[in-house]
Image 1 (cartoon, rainbow, N blue to C red):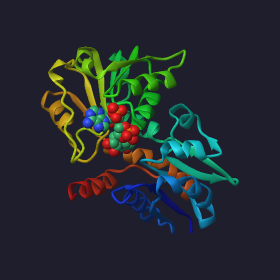
Image 2 (spheres, rainbow, N blue to C red):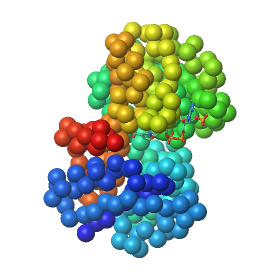
Image 3 (tube, rainbow, N blue to C red):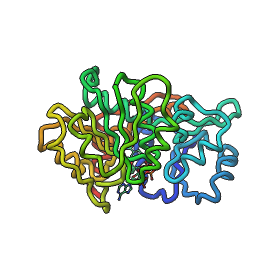
Image 4 (spheres, rainbow, N blue to C red):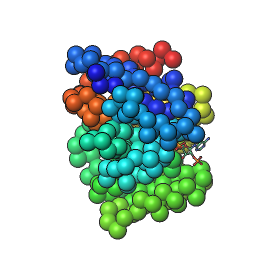
Length: 281
Ligand code: NAP
């Protein structure tokens, strides 16, 4: 019976067991997927020992994504680009790491806005420069934008992100001081919140979206609540919106395929299941 896990610290609020549990049942598979709480000091040992405990692999969440990157034996190109690992599996005795947040964000963005949505977009504005921002910038770099601006409260982290991810080709990456965030809005065709602002228990992200172009799209990767104050404001102004739940669902697909041998689908029924759980919190 294949077993998989999500490892983090803390981990009890993770919705990943609901997602993978749904797919296991849907495909009639006799596998399991469980939460494992591992403190940072024990994470390196956990990486070495999980296969011996019968696990085929698992997901990695806060605060272990960088440690997982450092601890795996082989990495996919997406893991290398973002310097973070959120999906682990063992193949021919070798511990592999991937970053499926990249695919998860891009798949949901394309699905929500429709293929070809990026044709009229020259400037993308990313708010935040943490681990999730790195994955999102890496995904957006493959598209033909002129520039990607990264505004972060701690300016040095935005500069570091630009330094680490800038390549000779593709969109120009540019760090933006937090105080200049709104000056970038009039030219931003896509605005993405990757900070935890707007999450339940956190202050909202205060941004005057009346400054943004009328055809701009606004994405928020926070998914509790599903409609963040930023998305509510965007919707009120008639801007296109992309919520954070789709990214969570799509990033789960490759891991399931590795551990259980079936590529699952992100269905409306699965989404409804997680929405109901979020609304019950
Ligand atoms: P992280 O690495 O800890 O980064 C947090 C980011 O939020 C940093 O840019 C940080 O700025 C900023 N921030 C935090 N508090 C702030 C405040 N009061 N004012 C301004 N900026 C603030 O975390 P992460 O892994 O990137 O995750 C960020 C958010 O995305 C979390 O809410 C997480 O749940 C969500 N997420 C969603 C998905 C999904 O599938 N939808 C996937 C991954 C993450 P500083 O650098 O200045 O501290």
